[in-house]
Image 1: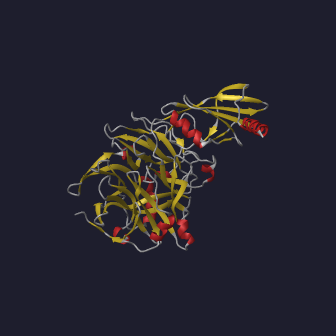
Image 2: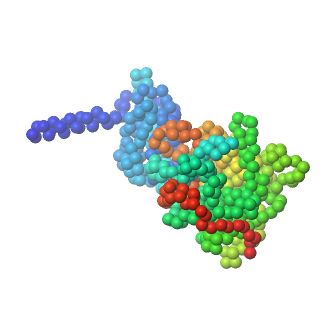
Image 3: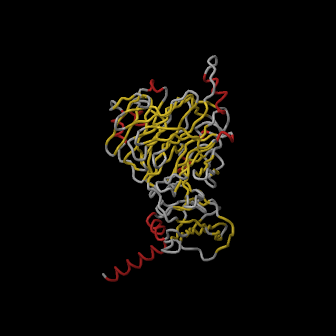
Length: 503
């Protein structure tokens, strides 16, 4: 019996030895940089990020990859169809052991009878973690009818992606819906909102396990609640009310635009269940509000309204003037004690440079603002080229957020809860679909090269023909199920509100 057990041990050890890939001992050195996709080279990553699986784009019939750092056990991996799949447990342990240190990847390719070793890939492991969740809408391209839209959340520490709500649920029940924008309060997945349009339309407010459906009298608004911003401490939400119109193009890279015909700002008091106007002007558009971290200012984008000619159709005028509508960055003060808004201030005149500002987003310390800049309008993600800029509110210096910006549209950017990470919705890969890129922002105000959201299947971003809209970091996940949301959405509203002038 002892001989049998000893034989089994030797057989097991021999099997494991045969299955464990080895580092090639005879190689040809290649001083060049290896080609891999996604481009996980010279990036800074959080120590709690999911494995950065990649594909080697060099000629090879066999591949080895060695992942190592100063501390811990190195990983020796065998490529499968040129793909390197990294074991999650060993990856997480190696990164946690080497916070603040460099991470190296040695890549060997076998081709034409010999092994080639490339220059090591060097990345950096940040000492700071990233918020573990990311929420976003996935929107399929569509121009004349509602395509598939859904709100999703992704665990950044794993590859777990969960559906929050999709209009496909309504379609399965014979109803037509569009899933509108969402907002999260202070990066906390327990308190958030999103909007449903068309059938069963309403504003859905979630606070832990409580779901409330708010129905707004749209006729009295003259538009739709679109962009939302939670006050950091008070039960208040600022919204822009937008009456949008679609402009279709016949060019290859720009096929459609969304242009404001009218837009104002309103404030919803969740305790008093009251909606009131913040700004309601005839000569300007106001949109995309965001609160300062102390709640004393509300920033927003503002554009001069074109002079409409009553004898010409609005559609015809928009098609002629859409590329002349440009937005500056404004702010209006707020006195929490009095519950009143005060004077309007022009923070930065982007229109002086014949460009337009959109989607302002403040860092948690209130010093820096991310702004998407395009040639015109307030939807830069729909244009062929747009960039993210960083505005220092202390010095009023502004500069493009390189190297975050790609060759195509970078339409939206937002901060992590600690201000060390930025997520950008970028079309840099193909000029058509926006995908989330994450970049490290250091304490000196410098940004590092971004990396693409990792996926277990390396071709996932290529085969998923949808754009990631308004990606938002979260410290905790949404806990309400899609079926719970649908039951509430398909039922009657809890509150009916109409706007009133500010008291």
